Amino acid sequence: MKSLLDPFGRSIDYVRLSVTDRCDLRCDYCMPRGFSDFEVPEHWLSFAEIERVIGAFARLGVSRIRLTGGEPLVRKNIPSLARRLRALPGVEDLSLSTNATRLDKHAAALKAAGVSRINVSLDSLRAERFKAITQGKLEKVLRGLMAGKQAGFAPIKINMVVMGGVNDDEVEDMVEFCLQHDFTLRFIETMPMGATGRAASARYVDFQTVRARLEKRFELIPGVMPGGGPARYVQVAGTALRIGFITPISQHFCASCNRVRLAVDGTLYLCLGQDDKVELRPLLRQGISDGELEQALVAAIANKPERHEFTEKPEQVVRFMSLTGG
Image 1: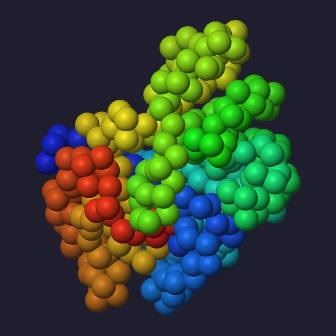
Image 2: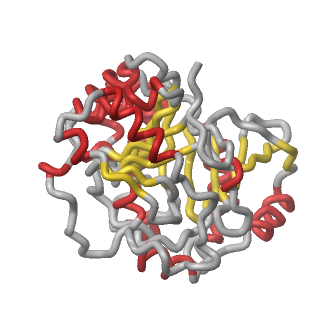
């Protein structure tokens, strides 16, 4: 089996695929309020173009694909795309990151199409606070989550961005919520992506203090979780609940990075915290062959940087998280 190696010996087996930069929420650490400068549809990769790129990645050894956005379910016919991608030889794991506002309408179709597991962004269980953070309605997300559970996605991971003075007082409540519904929970540090992310980083919370708080209420033991992501897990003793800590700032995981990101406009970003990128859309529309496409991907991975520089150069990345893709 082929393996796609970067200059630092890391095997790249995971592509995060953004199918849209649009979203029906406005989380204040991701996208500015009132932002409307979205990529025009004619610049979006078509489903056929996406299938070509992911097929090339799969032939090079990539086996994990995650559909992201923006909010991926804003784009029409995502279950159809999921079915096409899951059918590609070499694609073994197809997952979805979503805010779940539309999941109740699409959960069954996505599961039938081959999406096996989902990550859901949920930063608060309090309706008014959720609205203040996202400009959205909590009940839509909860309805979507229950639809996902009924459809049989496993695991369902809840992603909570923890912000001091905003929602850090809810970490214990989120643990209880996930215990009740058999969800996995992951706490995520804020990242200085664009002006919105840098503003949110001012509300940074030390996860060592979060863990210490949780240990006063729950017995935590070492835990593991299959998957391609960067979380470090503990488990609540006597239960199936795993709690992950994603710490790109305090304990970066660059040495084990196994992923790249493909934006909706065909830009391949090689690192979340750097501007290294390759524009694939012009190549695709100029008639590049499959062999040449594979060569372009290999050449791109050869330029993947060793690590991000969020700490040293927080102002370096000016694009928003929603423009990069999940």
